[in-house]
Length: 111
Image 1: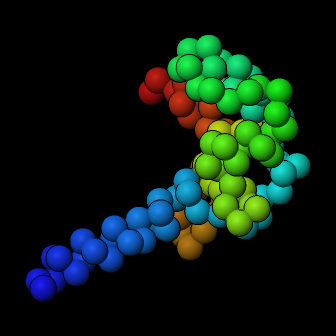
Image 2: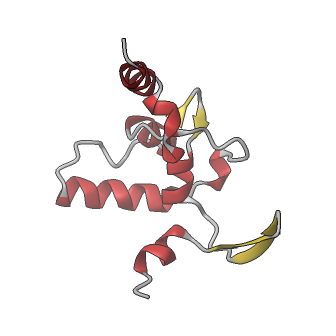
């Protein structure tokens, strides 16, 4: 078997661990989730995308159905989509300036 074939097999086997949004967010709790955002997402998705998830289920159940929970912990994707905070700021990490803003604001940025 060639090196490329081994690489393809390994990547295929572990692809779920390679994506940032599917990884567990170790610091997150269910208190970080905005329940109203989850409900609105379900209502809008049911209407516009024909997503068939009852909008009256608990936010935790909804996140599970959306594959945003792994091992009973929130994924980075759940936090990016439904975080309660609108916090913005900058940090210096290893001589690199990191600016952070809410995902919704970044998505609306036209610059």
